Length: 447
Picture 1 (cartoon, helix red, strand yellow):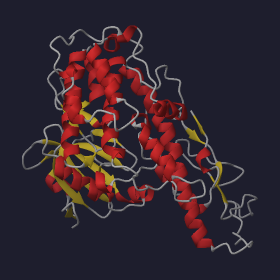
Picture 2 (tube, rainbow, N blue to C red):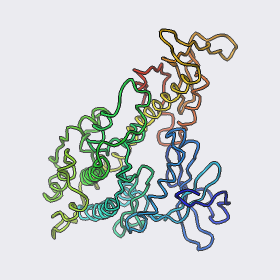
Picture 3 (tube, helix red, strand yellow):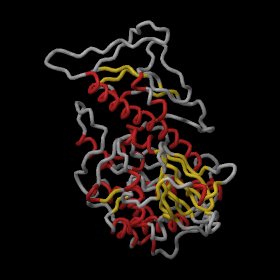
Picture 4 (spheres, rainbow, N blue to C red):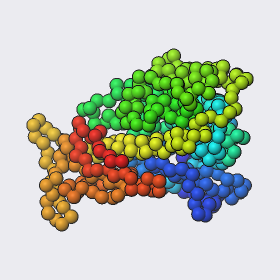
């Protein structure tokens, strides 16, 4: 039954009762997390339902979930890591049953609670660093440390501790591979992640978007520490260190991250202790070799200071520039970039499969592909070739280009971009893109 020792083909509802109506705790590209109750004990749990077909479609890796479960089993005994209870597998889905963190996501809990202090932020960051120290000692890199994966054990943030969740991208350091741009939460990634990814990619390589071997074990463990620095900076200021005005594009933010230049000046930083600022500087060091480790960070003076302020931070009382505004802004940025990156990755793979299925190119001769019939039976002027494919990527609106309908082999893209957000309903439209090896990264998105 594989490394996860999952139970195959059981009736999930025989052991767990889902809330009615369903309570969705979280959504991902390939998964959805529900709240449920274990029938035997009556205790509440969180159940992550992972769609195996979608995961294989995006990652071309049918056993990634087994690695996620195996790593979670190794570290779930730590008090600051979400505990694993059970795993069940059916033909279509994998159900990962975990401890329910009743307080939900850290940032949302702080938004709901209202005012919080530097002292509160210190408690949360200490919990996170303890979890990472444990993981790193086991040789595990989490690789997706971000606010959405920091859960609280209680609905009262003042009484809660942090639980690190979502090991979908975690990896053993010795087995670590670089992640494609579509899978990285780039706003929390360290400079070396982008540098290594650029070194491993070639514009002529059709598999450039696939995971590549890591060039250094520090692409993982030390990048986790960088992510902690980002989270701490946002907790104390309500803005991203490399996008303080909220106007930077994805590429501009990545460039800023690689330069490592950020500021801790201005009104909202006046009340922040010098120890907190010094720790942020140690965590956000561009050189991973000079960057603090999780263990070293825990011994920093900030965690020993006796006079850490318990006064409400400006970011927690400001009606406009606060965590809620930050979350809204970053979610829009992420959703836009993820749609583009996943579309590009999927299109590359579709192009590759198309080439394999239509024959090889020998010398100067190119295998021709039959024109695509239009819905009315007429031959469409938009034709496909091994070097250039025109595809309509459908998201939200479900509309396609009138001039060039989508090629059948690319219709799978429709299933990736299912969007069910009431907050931004109808706000995204992915336009039809003519993709070649050179411009497949340039899919246009209107926001």
